[in-house]
Amino acid sequence: MTTERTLSIIKPDAVKKNVLGQILKRFEDAGLRVVALKKVYLNEQTAGEFYAEHKERPFFGELVGFMTSGPCYPLVLEGAGAILKNRELMGATNPTKAEPGTIRHDFALPCTDLSANAVHGSDSPESAKREIGFFFSAAELA
Ligand code: UDP
Ligand code: MG
Image 1 (tube, helix red, strand yellow):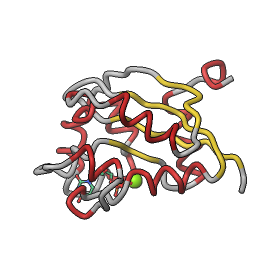
Image 2: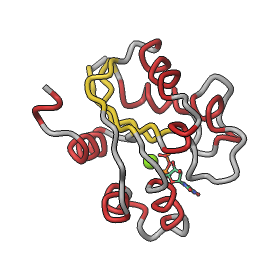
Image 3: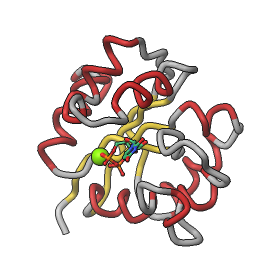
């Protein structure tokens, strides 16, 4: 399998729950390597730009509001088939539908707000490239 890089974000709800380390361990235990990590305070402009693909969706405003509600931790994961592997580790977008053992099931329940689902993960090589470049410079990725 090809070695890939993908972008994950530990979202503000997971940071508030103090499970940053437990989520990072999930990635490491699955054979993914954290090659870059930082703490970020998104604002309306940066969160809106990051989620631009969802601009017309009804949940966009709520999602931006949530992502600006506290610090988050974007990180770059590297490993064989990292993009799909990360999506599998995350589980379904809706934590109530995520399988036990996935990050969203284990760290985002109970869930009343779909924005607060613990993690983001790139969904394709194209989005991984854009999203990694959104948060990290070449020097930070070396
Ligand atoms: N989201 C939401 N309501 C929805 C669908 C998505 O609040 O009906 C939020 C949710 O936090 C999700 C994010 O918008 O993680 C991006 O949506 P996407 O469909 O890309 O889901 P993901 O790739 O994060 O699983
Ligand atoms: Mg997505």
